[in-house]
Length: 603
Image 1 (tube, one colour):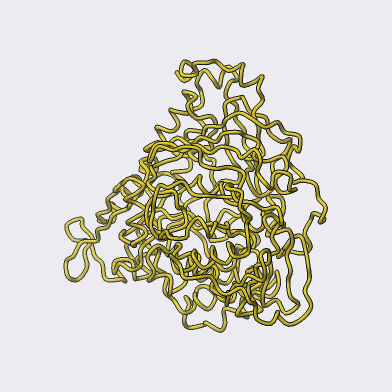
Image 2 (cartoon, helix red, strand yellow):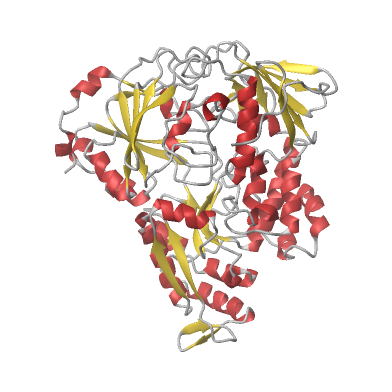
C-alpha cells in the first residue's frame, strides 16, 4: 500500500491573504451564487425510485478503476464523492461538493478544501482530510500514470486538522490545478489499510457517494443501489439528481449485441454512436408504437480528436512523409456519404468544435510563440493553412494516391510486383488493432485504399481486456485513438503528448510523441496566464501536431443521439456541455404502461 500520509502538522501557511469561495472558474466569475439551490436544468422535485438498465461493452474483473492492472467496472466511480462538482452548464467551473468551501491564497501557490462536517462514508465514519491526503498519495504513487502527469505541480498535501486538506503547489502559473484537484474522487483510508491498492480485486469497495455496489457477477453485470440516507442528498450539487433507486449495468461482448438487447427491452437507454444505425436500425415495433423514444440534443462540447493513430515507436511510422501519405488515402467523403448518411463533420483539429482550434494562417499571438521554434517545426506551418485531404467521394481517390506515392518514394519506398517495399526489399505491412467489430466497416475500406499503393494493412479485432493490455503496453501498429478536450486544456496535455509519458506504459500518449517542441508547447498551455494566452498556445500546439501527421483524422458529431424506453421523465432542457442522465427519473405510470414482455417489440 502507499506510504503513510504526510504528517498532519502543517508548515507555515502560503503567503498572502486567503480568499474563501464556493466555486472555482477559469473563465471569469462562477455563474451561480453561494446560496444557489440546485443546478439550473434539474427538476428539484423529481421523484425517487425505479430502475434504469444500461449497457456496458466488454467485461470486468476488478472493482478498482483507478489502477493500471485489471479491467475495472467503470460504474464503480459512482460510489465516490469528489471534492468539487463540475457544472455542465458552465465551461471550466466547479462548485463545492464534498468540500463545503475552498480557500485560495493570494499567491496562487496552493489550495485548501474544507470538508463538510456531515460528510460520511457508507459505514457511518466521517470523511476526513486524512482521507484526502491518503487518496492523493495512493493515486499518484500507485494509480494510473495519468494522475502523476495531471498533478505534477503539487509539491505536497497535508491534513490541517480533521476537515482541512491543504495542497501546496510548486508553481503559481498552473491556473487549473485547483480545479483538477477538485475532480479527485476521495477514497476511505481506513478501508484500504492492510490492502495493496495497486492490485485489482473484486472486494466491494467502500464509498461516500449517492450509490453503493449492491451485487455483481464478474464480467456480466453490476448493480448499484441508491443510498437513501446519503449524507449529501440535499446539497445544491445533488438536489434533483441521482433519482433512480437502481442502476443496473449489463455487459455485452460488442455493440451489436448490446443494440439487440436494447431492442428487446433488456437495456433501457442507449446513446447511439453509429450513424448508419441511427438512420436505419430504429424501425422496429417499439419505436413505431411510441414505446421507444428518440432525440438529438445539440451540445457545445469541444469534440477533440478521433482518428487512426500511428505508433511512432515503430520504425515504419517515424517518417513524417509516410504518415502524411497514409492520411491522404483515407476517403472521408465517400465514407460519410455511403456509411454515415452524411451526418458527420470531418475533424481538422485536435481542439475541434471550439475557439481553441487552429484555423487559417497563424495569428500574431501564435507567431510570437511559434517563431521561437522555427527550424524545428515544419516550415509549411508558417505559410500554409492546414487542410485535411478532400476527395471527390467516388472511392477512387486517384489524385491523393499519386501524392501519397510521391511522398512514399521520397521516404525510400517503391512499388515492386504490386507491393510497396523499402531498399532492403521489406514490405510495407502493418496491423490496425480494434476493440470492436463495429469499427471494421470503417477500417476495411481504408485497408482497401492502402492496398492500391501496395501496402499490406490488416485489421485485427480483439476483446476489451486484450485491447487494454496491448494499448497500455504500446503493443500495436495503428489503432483508433480518441483524444478528448475541454474548453480549458491544461495538465492532461502532458499525459497526451509529453516525451516522458511516451515511455510510461499506461499513459495516454499512445502515439509516442517525443518532441522537445511539443513538450515546451504543452508547458506553455499548462501555464497560460489568461484566456487569450491559452487560445494562442493551444492553437500553436494544434498546428505543430497537425503538421506532424500523427493521426488520420476521423469525424465528429455536434449532437447527442439518444434512445430510451418510454418510462423516464427528464428535465425540460439539457445542460450546454454534457448529457446529464443522472437528472432523469422514472415515471411510474409510464413504466406500468410498457408491455411486460418487451421482447415481442424488437422484431
